[in-house]
Length: 166
Image (cartoon, rainbow, N blue to C red; front, side):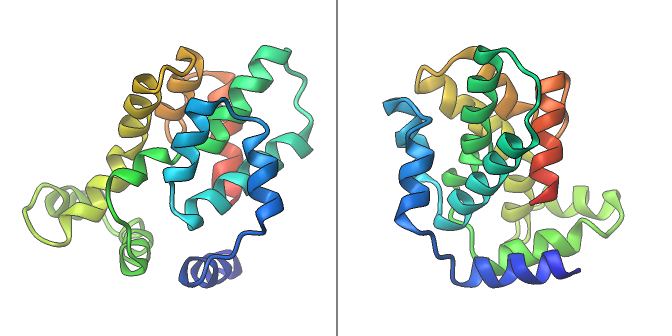
């Protein structure tokens, strides 16, 4: 509950210290930097928190896996940059997650103002993968972005766990 209240306040007026942006960009290639900077301030802050959580957990990973995971963590929601997300969209999505899946599906397939946020919520991982592929990022990073809500790999599970915690 308190997590959602904090999330709401941050979404209402996201503030990111420029040193955090600089910190994040140090992990990214120029192509990945472009994707990161296209994200909203809210998504950038969330991505930094997810990434810091992964780093602090000190998972025993090979260097290349660690680099892929960190890049994916900073970009895992980059697909959301395709659609302008308003605060009411975020609140609506959180509320809809408590509703029956059949209601979500019916609303998402409609052509109303209520469909777009739900489509973004279910499709942003795929959109993010496509953006990362188009930017020429490593296939492992692209796959991690795609699977961050439905992991198929150990790295994907680490990313999902960190994402769910923030």
